[in-house]
Amino acid sequence: MINEVQSKTQRLAVLIDADNASASLIEPLLKEIAKYGTAHVRRIYGDWTNSQLTKWKDKLNKFAIQPIQQFGYTTGKNATDSALIIDAMDLLYAGNFDGFCIVSSDSDFTRLASRIRESGLVVYGFGDKRKTPQAFVSACDKFIYTDILGQPESDDSVVATDGLVIEKVKSPKSITTKTSAKEAQELRKDQELVKLLNDAYEAVADEDEWAHLGPFGAQLNKLSSSFDPRNYGFKKLSDLVQAIAIFEVQKTSQTIHIKLITKSP
Image (tube, rainbow, N blue to C red; front, side, top):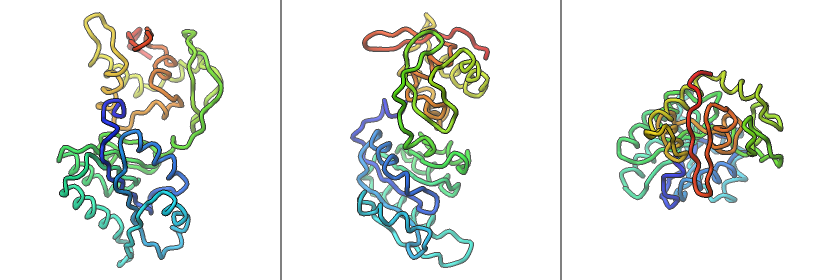
């Protein structure tokens, strides 16, 4: 996955659309961003005379986020988006950053994400799963749905169908304390997920039909910028791989290898 490949010393510019982001998630959001690099710029855009942004005001000093004031000059026109895009291009041309984090569920930033990627920089997107259009998700190198941020970890160990002990995190999905054969079957009913796992495996498997989990995870992100095991209720990719039970898993002290058992759900 990208956070396993990219350097954690990346210089990142974090640009937040206050109209399309939740103030309650800022702490877990910044913690997530820290996995990918250092946020050298933290800016948030909105009309701060608007009472709807009141919840953000307590967060600005605490997390050293610079508010950028943008009045809504015309009804129905989003001046905030334009201000963010202009600043993003200025930062891009300055050449001081390795990547950008765009925090919004707005489709208006699709072209911005594409333009930044065209310049060879990495783009991380953050947005609500229910609101973010697929075009914006696909335009990013990695897209994290904010729905999975801030979810507390479960203290319970759970047992996969092959008997291996794994850990899960709570998520908006219904998760029980054990990954039973029935629940594994439910995972396999997600044909889009199964196809994605199959395609990634076929791309990285060696002649002996074994694949290393690291390149497998990286290939998953190449195929789907929004792939994240947490979307399915699992803390790690290895947890999801074991739970879905379509792979044989071999663990050593240093690595994990997988081999496809079946290609059908």
